[in-house]
Image (cartoon, rainbow, N blue to C red; front, side, top):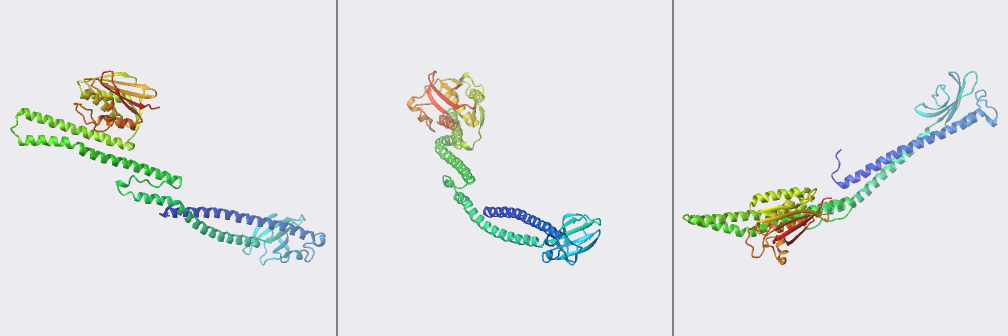
Length: 447
């Protein structure tokens, strides 16, 4: 059977099926109880009538079968008859005897017999005579059957009425129940573009609907963050890449217009073009890292071993800057687990090491230790350092220190600050014991 597509129709159908099933079970039990009680009442009447017939009129000794019509006045018109049998032969019958009377009984006690297609209740008593005399009283079950049939019709009528009322009530209440879903659907239908992602969906109704609305609002927030990151990436890329691309184009035009340019000047233009190309690559990588960080809620999280990550980052930095001395002075990193985005944590370490190499004079000290329930990563260089008044500004994208001559995009510390914040940590810029800058990152330790 194919279920209806409407949730309201399904709720109504479920209510109808539940009421129908419950009503059917209750009806069957009720009819069985009525029939059982009716049979018990018939059995009781049979006992009383049998005792009365056997006792005879005026309380005298029973003369059934010996007198002409001893129990006839008691049985006529009552839907009851009696018979007496000797062996296999019925010798007397009295009462409302049907045309097709039954054969002599095989055993004593109560039984139900079928006479002319109708049910009768029978009580057989052994009289104890030597001729195996048996007395049998019959009472029709027609009143019980009529009562059961009447109650069955009443149950069907009430059941149909109850189903109709239940269907109407279920339709009305299910309409009220699914109304929050309808509002949620209407709100979702209004989200047709990126500009609509900031409009939250209605968070009301039953717990399940509120939970669904919360999940959808969370999804919209992540989409909005991803869209904002994409737009910022495009805007920043267009703004920051314009200058190096213009310089690269100018160098290429100069080389194209002057094929006889002296070798020294040509080599200088090529070096400058290569430097501009490197700058473009670094800018794109930094902007991409910032964009990923802004959409960090959608990135996978896991337990990251900070000690292994720092070792790998230092190994890579030594290969990129063979003239810089990286010294891992304190390395108490046993079990240094941090829950977060592994690539984002690697960005933190790589950018701190790169920044120290670019702005230092050739020595970088790295410390990793546990402090007050958090992991402390300190990267110190021997460069000129950063005045305290400028440190906060240098955490913004594209901000560079005044008077600096080192290569860079101004994104390194901004990426570090962003990733540290996303991991619930703290970034602090301080003076280094080497005379330069010390960048201290504190990250919550994994319990």
